Length: 108
Image (cartoon, rainbow, N blue to C red; front, side, top):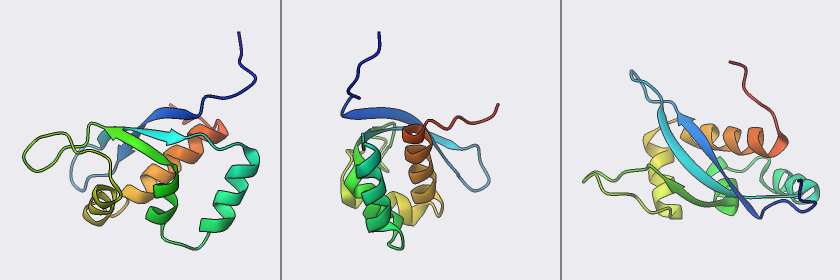
């Protein structure tokens, strides 16, 4: 069976580049955007910092830890900290969002 209306959110694995180490892996839950919403989102955020765009579509995340080893709740502040600490994190997350929502699959 196939639903005519997509789920309002989806969760996908995101690999984050970690200098000198294996990629970090987290799960991010995003808002689903239909074709018109996605076009508007891309137009609105085309030249803005990626973290501003991501704040509008991220609903939550898993497997992100604080310094003390406890789970980091998704907040815009924690997203900023992640992006400041890992240079490519924002783009890695944005790429995962677009790849998943547009149906593009990675080659093995």
